Length: 289
Ligand SMILES: Nc1ncnc2c1ncn2[C@@H]1O[C@H](COP(=O)(O)OP(=O)(O)OP(=O)(O)O)[C@@H](O)[C@H]1O
Ligand SMILES: [Mg+2]
Image (cartoon, rainbow, N blue to C red; front, side):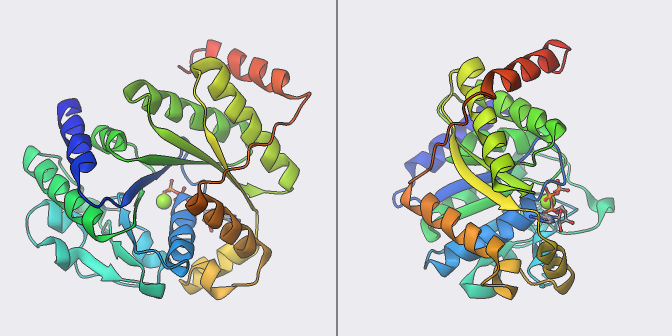
């Protein structure tokens, strides 16, 4: 499968007019990837970009639910060869497109070479037709979905401020980094109670990557803990559409603008960095390699 991932990457790099492919990942699950993906995509679309979300949480897809849509066909149907690519692409709000991961655990995917070929074809096609292709990577990191990460341009790593989430985010980046040292990582801290704790967490993670893996990662920013997210999920409308003037939406708008412009902030919090690094070091020396 590693060879296949390499093939996939080379193919993606060969595309003539290439859209940017971005995977949204976390270490620990449930940190807000799908909500971020949905709203970030909506913001990119609001900035006039052609965007498609691919829900890689096959069999447990959330994206179509968060967009308030139902979709006849899912990525699984396409991969299995039951339908064509256009038949799995649906339209959400703001001209945003998406491919659903599908629901129904009973039909979970068994990965095959044929599916890989179909995924490859889909990627090539999507890269020619969209400015941004966002892969919401889902909770269960399977081998093939991890291999897929090698093929994308950028990785957005979502973490909360909890140490469990932060150490798992580091482990995930380390795993990907060892597979591909050229990858661009962007850090997003979600559900922060104060902007300071978000900045603090992001800078510490960035410094840890620099110190232990000699890898420079970019800081996207922090999103606050906000009950509007919950309310928007219940209404099945992205919070950035339902509450366009809420502070969380304004922050996301700024994050999206900086991402498009490639203008990432790099704030260093003095004093605390060594404490965090030694904490992480002790955690990893206890065996969570
Ligand atoms: N900024 C936020 N403020 C408050 N609640 C949030 C925020 N972001 C996400 N949540 C809540 O966290 C929960 C998990 O969110 P989400 O499904 O997006 O996470 P996920 O990382 O995609 O999960 P999984 O790993 O299972 O795919 C949801 O109940 C959502 O409403
Ligand atoms: Mg999810």
